[in-house]
Image 1 (tube, rainbow, N blue to C red):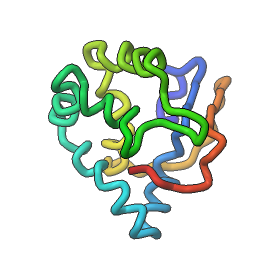
Image 2 (image 1 turned 90 degrees about the horizontal axis):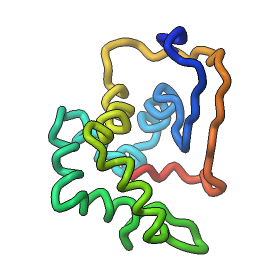
Image 3 (image 1 turned 90 degrees about the vertical axis):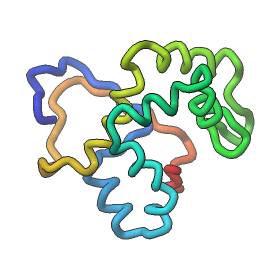
Length: 134
């Protein structure tokens, strides 16, 4: 939004504009508790280190573990789907951009809703009525 000259196309997957997320979390204390992991993500390099320890075990558990994970009522991630996530996230520096999404929540520059003027694809899950981020 701030540098449209640097973007030709945009794909967004299950992410909301940070100003909307901030407003929602501020008005719903339960969501603030569920989103407490965001505060750890404010640290530089430590979250990337923690998520990558033990061959990315914490990240694997987060994505596909029994107490959370990406899942739907019909099934959990398959081993092949988890492997695809790990292939991407295990590349050097690949964990930083997704964590930066959360780090930017508290940036000093004010976030403004602006129109996105490039071709954009938004992919959103079917069951998004509950704001359970953490």
